[in-house]
Image 1 (spheres, rainbow, N blue to C red):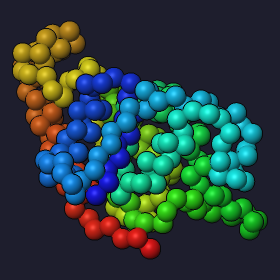
Image 2: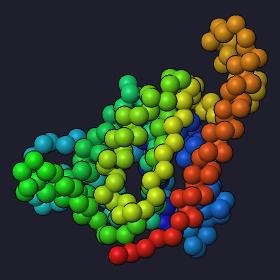
Image 3: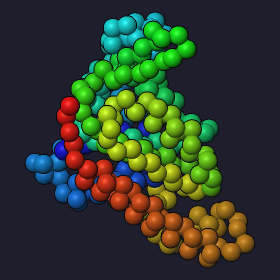
Length: 232
C-alpha cells in the first residue's frame, strides 16, 4: 500500500503533524515494511509558485511553470491512500496550501462543460480506488470552523477517489503548538495563561480531548489502510 501524507501546516511538531502521525500508525498497523510505502510531505517545504491564471492547464493538463508541482502530482498518482491535513487559518487553508490546490486543479482534473448549465470534473490520474482521509485542526472551539477546510479538500480530491473511502476528522480547541502531546503540567501552564476560573477542570478536559483525538486519528488510519484497493 502506498500512503501519501500532505501536511498543510508550516509547523513541524504541531498538532496537525501529531494527528497525521497517529493516522499513519493506524494505517500501517504500527509498522512500515515492504507492504507499506509511506511518503510524508510538508507543503511549506516545496517550491510551489502561484497560479498565473493562463488557463493552459485546463486544456493540456500541464503547467509550464518550473517548480515542484509535477513531482508532487506524480506522488498523488502513485498513492493508494491520501491523507491531507491542514490547520484552519481564517476559516480556510493556510496560503501556501491553497496555492498548491490552485495549481493542482487544472493538471489533476479535466473539466467538461460541453452541456449547457452542467459542469463535470474527471480525474486525469490513473483510475484506481484511493482512500482519502481529511483532517482540519482549529484553535477555535467550534467544529464549524473546520467546515470550509474539509469541504474544500473534499471537492478537490473527490475525482481521485474512484469510489474509495472518504473519512473526515475535525480537531478543535487546539490553540497551542504541540498541545496534543503536552503533559499535564504543560497543560496547566497553558490553562493559567487563559485565566479561566477552574484551571483543573480545563486541564482534565484537555487531557481527555487529547486522548480522544489521538484515538480517532489512529482509527481513521486503520480504516484507510484496511480497505481493499482495486484498479479499474
